[in-house]
Image (cartoon, rainbow, N blue to C red; front, top):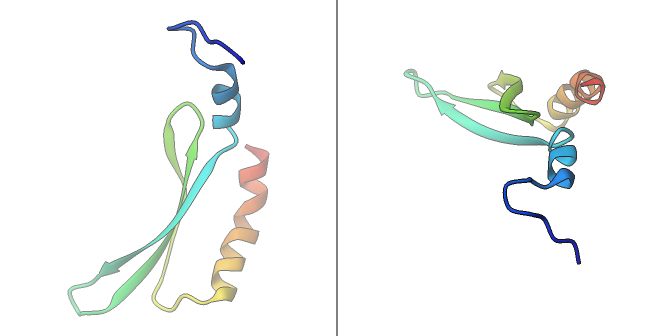
Length: 78
């Protein structure tokens, strides 16, 4: 059992938080009644920051793979 003193923080969570990224899709309706699909990646270094936000009107598996492949090196390097 590991006990952490109040106010000292958890060293494990601080170390791991730098390697965490959250990904999500969301839709944006337009004024012309079209739907845009956004692929969104947020990093959790010291603060939450946007790492990637790409938009398409026709998402498919190839588009998703290309977004991840194109940006994976940048995510890993940081």
